[in-house]
Each structure stands twice: as structure tokens, then as C-alpha cells.
Length: 299
Image (cartoon, rainbow, N blue to C red):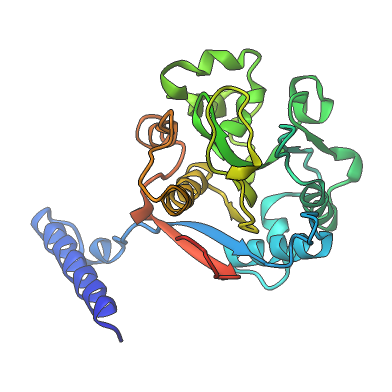
């Protein structure tokens, strides 16, 4: 056992002993004190594969399917990916795959189809599965959905600092600009809209070729993209965004040779946690599971 593991064990022991002492002081039973547990961390899976993109930058469908399967099996501790998906959705569900169609960096079609395949394997009828972004408020599948899967690439964004999983649901609002003030501080409230609330079963933040820098509302420069060949998978959109920003910060430091803060600051991620209670933004409370290719992982 390493020194760090010993320290963690000792600290946890002291914490548990303190809880037990407090329970006795308050007159609680010993049985009650034994049930007090240290809060579990939010689980996020980072998976990478050097073969997911070919020499022309095209996505390999078989590899992206394998990556998705490995990530969901790890996230839900299942050996069979179909069993993992059966924990997320039921055959009677009507499921919307909330994608992203931004021209320079859209959600890969190959990943959309990989998600759809596993849903159908889990028993959902194809007619009850929809894939959409800007048309969700006109799409019957999304209007009648009982479950959602949220999937989009990570990139810098003029209004919110970064466009990630938390922001991807903004198209469920009939008036997206209302969320722009103060660097999109209240983006998380989109998740309280009736069409969204409580429906998102899985979030996938795509980092195959992320865009880590840009200036202006319509910025795009492939100079600031790189073949990271990964994706983050989890049930907490805020935690995925927090990990994604940490990777961005490391890439920006390596590229520019100095610590350049994102502009505007992506503080909507922290506010999604501290103000709106949507998820976890504190890296100390996130359990990051790293699968696959480790070269230049940056985190």
C-alpha cells in the first residue's frame, strides 16, 4: 500500500470515528452511526483510441462503437454494453438523441448511429428514436420524449466560454439568447424546462478533435484543433464539462506556453453546481476513470 493510500485510509478512519462520536453525543444509536457513509464521487469515464480517426480524419464506425461500449460498461459496471443500456432506457421509452450540428465541428454521425444501435439492442423501437439539434421544438420524438441522450463535441464558445454538455440543451428553449447575460451564468436553468427536466439519461462530451481556442461569435480556425481522439461519458453533464475544461486548460498551456484563461470564463459550469445544483464541478468530487490510449492525455 502506497503512502497516499495509507493517508487516505487514516483520514477516512478519523472521519468515521468523528461521526460515531457525534452520534453518541446526540444520543443516536450505534446502528445509526454505522450507516453514515462518506459521499460517493461522481463517476466520469474518459476513453481514447488512436485508431478512431483515419489519416483523413474520418471516424472509424467500429472503433467509435467499441469506445462507446467500453465507456458505458465501465460507467455502469457491466460486462455487456446492452445490459448497461438497459439500465438507462426501457423498450417503451421514446428517446431523443440531442446532437449538435455546428458546421465546423458537429457531433459525428458515426457516434449518433452507435448510440442508436445500442438503444435498439436494448429494445427501443426505431420509430421511437430521434436525432436532432436545432429542430427539437418541432420534432415529435422530442416533444413526446421520455428519455434523452445528450451528445456533442467540446469547443470554445463566444458567449459561454465553452460549448459542452450543459449548454447543449439550450435549443430546448424557445428563446436561447435569454441565457446569454453574464457569460451564460444561468445556462443550467435550461435543464428545468418541462421538455428536458429529469429525462437525460446519459451525457457524452466528444473530444475527437476539440476546438480549444477562438475569438468572436463565429470563430473557427483548424489551427486550434487537435487529434485528442477521445470522449467523456457520464450521467452528470456538469462533471463532464468540468473535466473537459481541465483538459482544455492543459492544452492551451502547452500550445501557448503560458496560462491563458478562456474568454469569456466558462463560469456557467461552476454556477450549474453551486447555484443551480445541476451537477458536480469540483474535481475533488469527481472520480475520473481513464480507459484506452494514454499518450498526451493532459489530465
